[in-house]
Image (tube, rainbow, N blue to C red):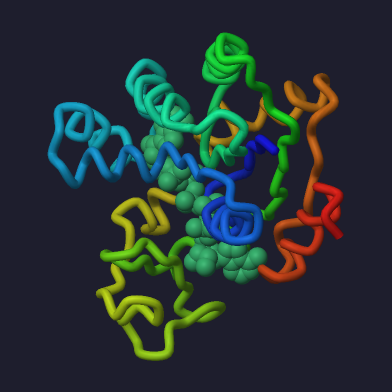
Length: 215
Ligand code: AP5
């Protein structure tokens, strides 16, 4: 099972990726996480990406594609994968198609997490992430047991620099201009399944399982 999770910032791509990985053992490939890992290492790729990410703009396709190809090359044949935050425009979708075809792989399903703007703003400005293990929380919806401390590993929680209201609005605008067109792109290929992502985490996940024929 090879899946793309498509949706606006804050739609719940990372949250539901974690649940799908837990239940189906898929390899999780998040281009946002790959870029943040490069940034942490202060590599040339990470430093180049930082200026785009801080503004809420897309990182150039060539930079992201290099990271993506490396991650796909690491998938053991026959194991499924989950793409989170990739592709972000038609050019990336075309390059993905070519890359997968060259490896005799394909995408089985694109799950479009449809979320409304006011929900996104509340979710992202309240999101907190563990510095050590990457677990995701929300100060109101999914708070940790102890404020600022990860339930899973005891690590410190932090707020992503691009989760301020101003940058979230910019990311939503970029999503509308550059990424939203992929809904029709995959609809035309008859692999798109839409899910109401305004619902609670568990209700949304229930819909995802239905669309995957697992419930
Ligand atoms: P990336 O890291 O991919 O961020 P994003 O797409 O903006 O998405 P988010 O991670 O913000 O949201 P999410 O949908 O994963 O939501 P989450 O599950 O965490 O990209 C960051 C940047 O990197 C981009 O701006 C760009 O610069 C660059 N980049 C990345 N990929 C690129 C590419 N392919 N090309 C070019 N540039 C690229 O949930 C959010 C919060 O809500 C959490 O607190 C969570 O607990 C809560 N929550 C989630 N679901 C629910 C629910 N159903 N009910 C209640 N709360 C919920």
